[in-house]
Image 1 (cartoon, one colour):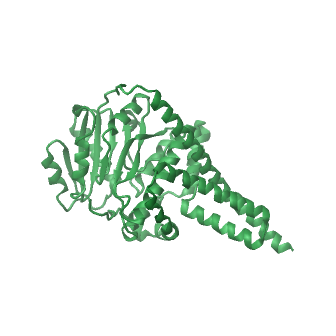
Image 2 (cartoon, one colour):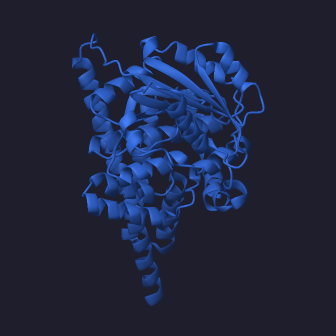
Image 3 (cartoon, rainbow, N blue to C red):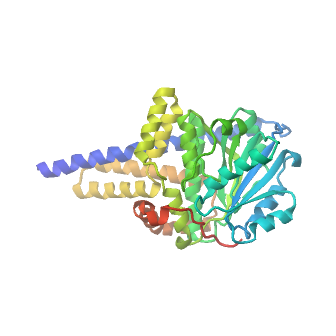
Length: 408
């Protein structure tokens, strides 16, 4: 009797550990639903003739061998609904071996810089180098700086939405991200769901709670004063997350701007997903626990809720890992036939369904897309392999590698 009881007690303890991040996601989901309702109400009451303040933007585009997809981004930037004399475009062709730089120069209305450095490779180094060049060679100071990936398309209202947020006093902002080729394969559909959950549902909920959104590297916007106070010094494979952590440790808040939309192409096969997934799951040179300690210290020192909430976000496991844990707990509770453990496991499962179901509802998928759910087990196994194995290997995390993507 003692051993079964010990197993049951251990099972309940494990469920409590899994319950904390599950409750956190459920709280964010509820806050996101309420925030969406408020936004719809404000949109109905607002006058459509409201004009935005005309801030001057610099749009920075780090590009590595993007001769195929860069023209699409430049075309979308040319069509942005914003005064043309109020934004400038700067491209850094970083260690390119194709015609990216030449193609950009032919456009005529963008500023092109070429960088060659085989030791300091990656987006973080390219951005820092470009900022130094602008500081050295340009006397014009922009009000804000937008970072957009070269394989993306920006919505025509992108700069208007960012300008409205700047007018409200925000200094760090993150645009909404979506997928251009969402229907190309089951992988791209599942990618869209994952991105919407992480970068839309969670971000909306964090907006509502007064917490900080994360930065996802594409569609970021920073005021000049913020960059002067906290220069870009993020060079890891997850340089965007590294800079977000640095901002939060100083009590700064990244505001999610759902009306500013940037879309990009996603890898269509698991083979193409490899380098991108590893980069996303890599935590860089710092361990999770080291960052947690720094955030907690900053939270107590600054007395900022944003620091403590960032700890919850940091310690929340990837959805594939969390869902796998819940599934195993459910099986264990059935095997041991522990009614309390079974009830808790079912509640945890309901919490995850609530979180994922809300994201799918917000996407308004056509019915034909739902057959993609059959591929979820395979997708989860792949993500677990990336999280537990590949992201820990120096073979895949010691340098930046361009992700393979389908042609438009």
